[in-house]
Length: 209
Image (tube, rainbow, N blue to C red):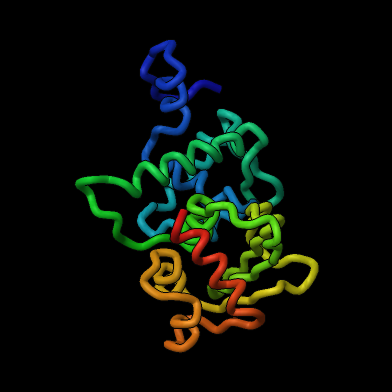
């Protein structure tokens, strides 16, 4: 099914914008990058979107094959998931904006995706698993051989090497380099179970990224 509005050009960039260029479309897709979500969860993550607009965006994205609805959850199709490198490039480009400051609220998924976007590979001897708890959401992050090999919403089957309980302010402070891992623990910004040194290693890999 073709999009309702179109630039009417044969350019692939114009066609891509026909598919995902409507306001809120990319943010709806962003909230599905770490796994399927229910309608209410998507709406809670995007407080500025009205119910009718969200419903329309979900219908439009499903109609063009970017997402699909299974039972009561929406998830990306294999083709929709191919937008991942586009999101990473957009995030890095947007973060360097010379005029418009990077400010305002972000969702839990967006904060965690920032870890993946700005992660810089480390030494080959670095293998660790991390669980982040941003109430009420849990996230699992895996580093294997210095590479970030997994990030998803929810818990893994085995206990993580490091468990971090924090909030968006605490996570942002760590990722932005405003505080170190030990500082976050000492100041009560994060509760860490496991090796704080492994959290410091992750934070440094992201801050330096």
